[in-house]
Length: 146
Image (cartoon, rainbow, N blue to C red; front, side):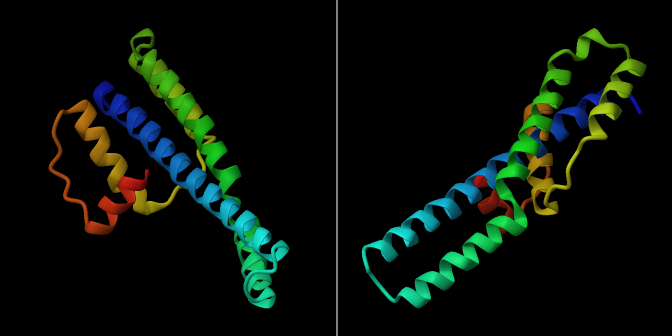
């Protein structure tokens, strides 16, 4: 792997983990807001308590099962590792750089594949100044929220 490819892979990994951190953090905040709002409606006796209770239980189950907050924080820490390596890329020779990249990759978590094209597009725009990647409407919308 050439040095340019390694630098590209490092920056791509940084962008991928950063946008995953952002989207999962936002999902966690929205779910928490919904829980607070629905909990307040129960206290104020607004709406059907059975339906509201089912919504609260469902949201709490989704939050507990997918752990968006924990995933977002883990990905944020990993993004910080990658950006630190990218910032100091000139301090390493090719072999050390590849070794550092490999050691950081060992801690990678699984990110959504739908974010990969967005991360590749953003990496191309920063490192190459242009990109020939065509994103779908869904990817563009998802990229807007990241």
